[in-house]
Image (cartoon, rainbow, N blue to C red; front, top):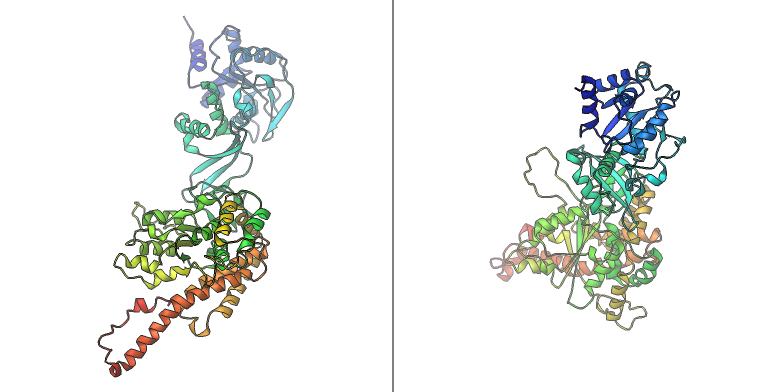
Length: 615
């Protein structure tokens, strides 16, 4: 009949929940650890009850932590036996306690059970687990340290499991600013050898960690197939001390302090203190070099006002929030086949590949979400005519205001998210014409937020004024379509790097160029009436000049200012000027209508229509 002691030993060793067994040099030490809910047995008990035998199977799925007694050589002999019958063995030294007496160590000032458990966690996190039935090898006396605690590796490198061979590590912990939830950033190489980083919510480690394993597999990590190895992998990822300090986790791209967060990278002084775990629909990618972009794309914008405005507007998106300017966009209007799409491709190449360009063919809610996902960038939308004419006005308001719709989520105290962006559009008809097809009137605020510009300059070749060395506008468009597929994204990264390095200087430069634009191009008597639209053109011109100043565009100084000025004058001569003339005509007729008998037949212009030029 088994004694009470034997039953207790059997329970501790065979309980499936006890993945780790701690072995102490003395019975008293094991008893004290068991009082702290630690699965602990003493080395004398193991020897007494026959557990140190090569035929014993009970340790087959266990990981052993042995407290070292430097004075007793039997510890080394026991470790050699255990490593042949257990999954792994880790020898732990108690700092300042050579005999491994856990009771004496705990009675010393500054020591505690928590400190002991941290020593064990640190040792196991670094110690390679042993495979069952590993060959006996001499003890490796090379001591290592983590958090100041030494430990001895019992297993030779050749016997390490696949977990260690795959080289996975915890970069840092992250705390989400909006919810205070905790995450871990984990790095590894995928099956092709490419570096990968994944963010794992800490609560995924509960319930067996199946979601953690699923995330690793999804991203190409070679997860070990054995149950024990998987358990050890999860324990390592959960308990390991991160390489670096805790970071702040954000869920929205764009400006966070003086750093700029993109889905794929963070630019600025806080890049090692921030992490991103938000929507990744905004695919900001790079291909080629900045020199190639300047030579194959940028230089063909020189002398072509519409191309230069589109590219300059792509640089304007990151400026709006830091300058306190409102959202707004430009809509290129023109016939099909004249090069409007090429303008959008050139603008897109500043930021990413052609897939970055989106379509107006979406619901208002879809466009609103798209705007939020492109926060502090420039959103590019092709073919306005694909948007429902009944909803396009509301869509323009949503993008222009940068505020998501109020939706009840059970937490009225949670602030509504806002987004800041610029946007570019193209289409065969103007915003006003498109809204009219639904029998509705365009509002002045809508026309201010999305400004119509004729895509074709007078006397040009489609959208171009300067063909450079190409025989036709079609040939230049073909060249740009080809090159924008090969060179893209590098201008934005270079621009953000310069901007984050010289924030205050850049802001002052932009403010100066905006003033210069308005003084040169905006008629003195019309500044108040068209102030909102004038600011839009001014910041676009200033953004292009800033990119030029930082050596990104390859344009001569003043090229962005001149090109945007040409486009502003085209807008003013069509939209603003015609509206101004209508104002004067109605005012004259109202004042002298009795002379022409027309006063009663001409309706008074509504305040909304009267203000369509920008009031």
